Amino acid sequence: MLRVFKGMSRPVPGDVLARRVLELSGLIRLIHCFSEKYADAALALANWMRAVRAAAWRTQAEVKAQFHDSDLVGDRTVFNIAHNRYRLVAYLSFRTQILYVKHILTHREYDKGNWKQ
Image (tube, rainbow, N blue to C red):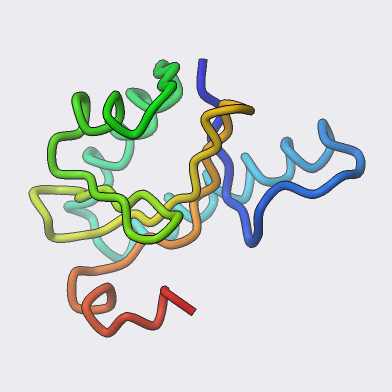
């Protein structure tokens, strides 16, 4: 089962369990705040979260098989949310089975490219 977190950077050593609990609560808060602002994203984000948490991907090809419109951009996977109205940018470690959500953006915000920095 894939573990999903809100992450500001790649995994670092430390109290991993405590960090993961904080990151998961941060991700839930991020999704909630985004869904309050963009209500049409709420169901799509909930469905994405459910599908991703149940996944056990070993390769990017397996991600693409489940999420056909996902793309690898550099070292990040970009998921289209709510019929491409929104983009979720994540770093996925197949080795550790952890996905760190970097950004949830409108399509316009994504196109500006600031998330690449």
